[in-house]
Amino acid sequence: MVNFRKARERMVEVQVMGRGVHDERVLEAMLKVPRHLFVDEALRDQAYSDHPLPIAENQTISQPYIVGLMTESLELKGTEKVLEIGTGSGYQTAVLAELVGRVFSIERYPDLGYRANSILRKLGYDNVIIRVGDGSLGWPDDAPFDGIIVTAGTPTIPQPLVDQLVMGGALIVPVGDMTAQELILVRRVAEGIKKTNLGGVRFVNLVGKWGWKE
Ligand code: SAM
Image (cartoon, rainbow, N blue to C red; front, top):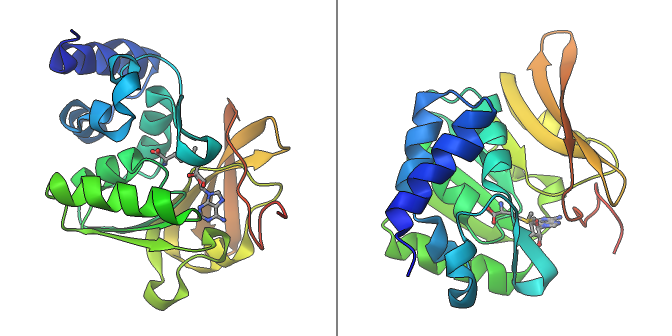
């Protein structure tokens, strides 16, 4: 039987901090969120391993390091309103909920959205709203957002997401082909956008109007 708290501490120390994520608040959030509750019971023993894991609908819960890297890149301070595209298991949503004022999250598959919502409620996260739909369109009704995190790969940066950022806000998104992408940090500045490449990743596809076609 795995000691989940110990496994979580090792995950943060070795996989996340060990690879250069140093934002104390992000590390604390990852120490707190019980990742094993976001995966199928049969996979719980692997929840703190150094790789993504399968969830329903042929989707994945991202590798812990990638969650840490993407979250840190948004430079969150505590009061922000953040949008997540691709709720999946709800794990990244929970990490964000520990760090900001409000989290809006969109998932394409209803069953994933409902399941994530139910776990997040059980864990007491009351600053999260989950919607089922095409997240490549963003969430115009509640825009603008201080930060946007896209947890699925897209051929190009979805323009609606850039438009829904506050001035100075940041969007982190995997951009590339269907099998490999570059993690691009986009900051909205007065002159337009400033892009930084944070390195190679492999994500499932963002399927939607501004992502891959079905
Ligand atoms: N953040 C998730 C987690 O912590 O478990 C990882 C999510 S998984 C890598 C990507 C998710 O994006 C999948 O659940 C997939 O169904 C969802 N997705 C793909 N295209 C989408 C779209 N257009 N709108 C919303 N969700 C989408």
